Image 1 (cartoon, rainbow, N blue to C red):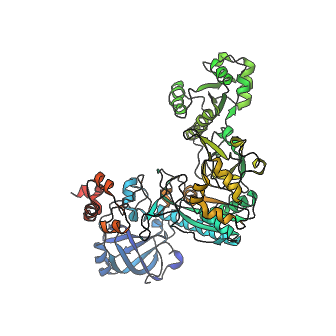
Image 2: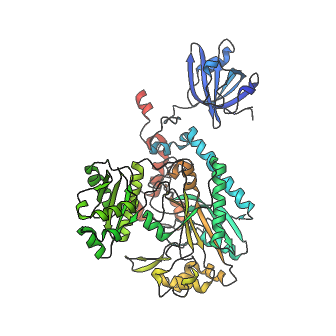
Image 3: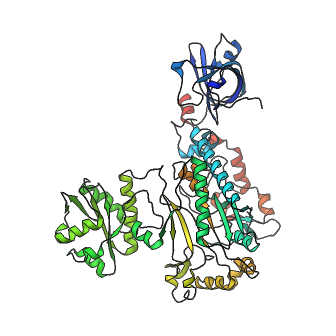
Length: 621
């Protein structure tokens, strides 16, 4: 390698040294005959000075240089004039006086800016991803990702975990999201699936006696996309034998502590708070509570039942609930905003209405206050810690509706009050989940987590008789209102696994067809075991101040699971289809062309024909 230094490391200690630096031309400026170049690589920027009095040849080359040219510079490091020092750069005290410049490669005018101050649209960023990734902010995110991955591996290795790779061509066991399937050329009419997670295989490793396993696993799910979903993603997957939930909590908290310390230099506090599922639903309206702020939901049914407000009374009489939140400091909001925007927002989550009261001069004010005697008003204010300028918001409905509406409303209030800080990290465990939930549409029980979860011991004799009340040894890790991952203690006895499958309506024959290899393995001495899977992309995204995992995946897909950069998914030729025993007559009719015609069309398209032209090129025309 020719270069002696990167563009981010030279400082005052290097003054007087001859160096070789290489990189991309970030900017080039002609100031009265001297040309100043900001040379960039992933480590930073270094200012290059091209002075014709020092090197006429270097200056002549510099005159031909444009943005994003790749160049090599030989020269001497010197101090910048005091008035030109840039304290925001590591290299801000120095510059390199060029003696030789070589153009290693030219560049067309970039279709998007390599500048964090001029960020292109999402579509263009994905299309020109290799240019978007040159931006310093993007590079920083991937440095954090790298450090976080290394931290996870180091910690788990120090705890005697073995990193084991599980297959990416697996048996299709469709549960939850759709599988991506892969045809088998040598087994006509049969298919592999791409793994949605390594769940079954990591349990096989426990049966194998591996004791402690982990993997930064690639997972693939064919599901509708959003900011925190991609068809392919990475999870920190682990499994342990002979453990209780406390053992899993301790390991995961250690992983997270190490990740945040090495990733962004933050020392997070452990152990994390633990919140039972029922408490989370009642206080925060969801099983993914955001704890960066208060605004807890209060059940005030016992107070308002003695009032004469018909809406509340009728709801309670029908077995519903009356709950509220205290929007601290929001008492100055207009009635129009409360009864318009916020009421409509709550209605979007099922609420039939939104009652409200403001606190002014130590008293409640609202059109419904007249239905509440003074002693009840005082009880309300005490129960909700209401002070002057506060706003109480009420929902009267079924418990699940009140939870959903107020849970989302508390987030909207927090956003209104600017309480959702990206540099604050509040973790919690949510525990004691219901094992089953009832699927109204299919009229059957389904597992809340997955069917390999061990029910809590006290329910083992009541699975069939008290199905809706059973709780499982499953647990979620939540950060700032986002689920980072989930896990459980697993079932390790085949007879119990068969009982669970029967409850959810999975016949033994079908169960053996889907999971027979695991059920068979359990007959050969499977140890008690449990584990966890952390969404690695989500963790890194939150560490970098975003909720969008596409920001920390090098080459993500768009909302339709396409990659604008390489054009996948795409057609394959008829020979490949024939070899894999596949006919796509229906797809051909929909597209109006054969596979070979579509393949020819795609290969004839240049990249710029698939997206709108960059604004810079339009201006030139």
